[in-house]
Every structure is written in structure tokens, then in C-alpha cells.
Amino acid sequence: MTTNKQVLQPTGWTAPRGYANGVVAQGTSIHVAGQIGWNARCEFESDDFVAQVRQALANIVAVLAEAGAGPEHIVRMTWYVTDKREYLARGREVGQAFRELVGRYDIAMTAVQVTALMEDRAKVEIEVTAVR
Image 1 (cartoon, rainbow, N blue to C red):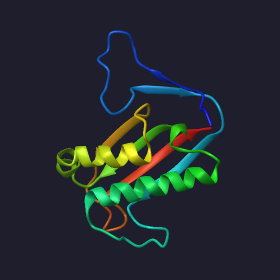
Image 2 (image 1 turned 30 degrees about the vertical axis):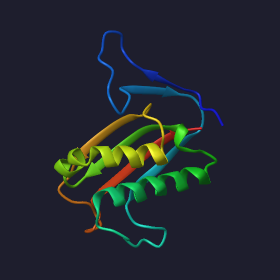
Image 3 (image 1 turned 30 degrees about the horizontal axis):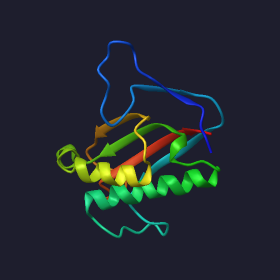
Image 4 (image 1 turned 135 degrees about the vertical axis):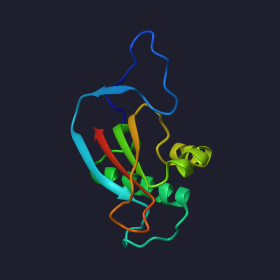
């Protein structure tokens, strides 16, 4: 399934690494609520940051599938992390999980450190907008 989206990269700007500055897309929008690193039974299987990232991304892929969409349809992603130092220090591992589950970096992304998330054990929450 192809998607009708285009990355917005102003002339003369340095290309970002790991995300896009902007994306334009046409189609049906899908809004995925913030997903955290717990499984389908709302149980955490790990307190490890990267394991929670992997699970949150898998949850996003599962929700998108319900709309007949996949990771290739994601146009915007917002990450809320409780520890930016851990996010940055484990960037290679996060990137590996991202490539395996999402696969593309043509997504407008924002990452924000927050004091806490609603679930005490959650270390990351990711929300997504997709266009199919």
C-alpha cells in the first residue's frame, strides 16, 4: 500500500537526522492516542527504556492496522520521555527498534522530556498521526 505524502525540506536548510521538518499528506487521517510500553493486557513486561519503546511502537503498529494502515502512513509522531539523558544515551538501540517496527524517518517528530507519565512505570509515551 502506498501513501501520498511528501517531506517538506526548505531549500538551504540542513537535513535533519532521524526525522523530517514537515510532511504534507492527503487522505484519511488516523489519530493514535499516546501508547506506552505495556502489552495488550495493560501489563508492563519490562522496566527497561528500550523495551518500553519497542512495545509502544508495536502498539502503534497494531492500532494503525485496525484502520488498514501501517507505519508508512505515519506523518507525525510526538515522544514524551521521562529521562532525556537515557533517551539520548540509548539512541542507537532506540533507532534499531524504530527501524525494525516503523522503518522510515520521513515523519515530523517532536521529543519532549516530562516529569512523569500517567502510569508510574511508563518511561515513554508516543502519539501518532497517520494519513492513509
